[in-house]
Image 1 (cartoon, one colour):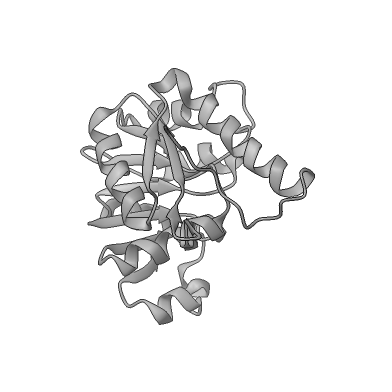
Image 2: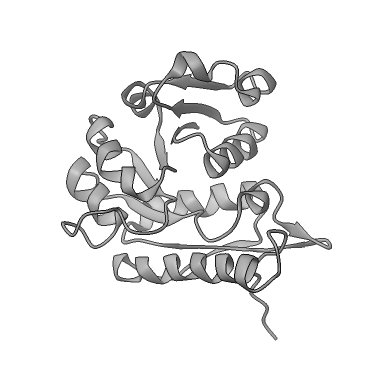
Length: 204
């Protein structure tokens, strides 16, 4: 699959690394592709390349938005035509405008894409690189109203090594996925657990 990742920070870099290892072609969308050429991911993985946001977005079958939340509106206006593509919102926090309730809705309205899913935002980048603890795979979570997009997101999450990607519901559950991110952040920093822990669902 051709995967576009807009934003090459810790989360975007971790996702790119994991999916490149599975044979996917990764197109980073960044502000200055020329300056990004020295990034170690581009030297270590020949299937990862850097482009402008619009160029990367057109190259991908699926677009991951992994930027600071307040940059979502700007990014959405740069993507260009997204017909037939899926968008994954991997951001957290306020997008900085009252015009939209969350980043998923902003992406839907501004791009015209109906297949937008919230995922890969509920844990630290270390767990995106390696979600296995003591031989046990941990959990990922998602929400959104596109059944088709969520089927693809589930497969991509499992490729990263997650045991499952739990579907918390439609667009009305987007905030619930963000709350899980804040739970992880609180436990990591205020709760004293540090960054090397993950959430797992267990059943009897």
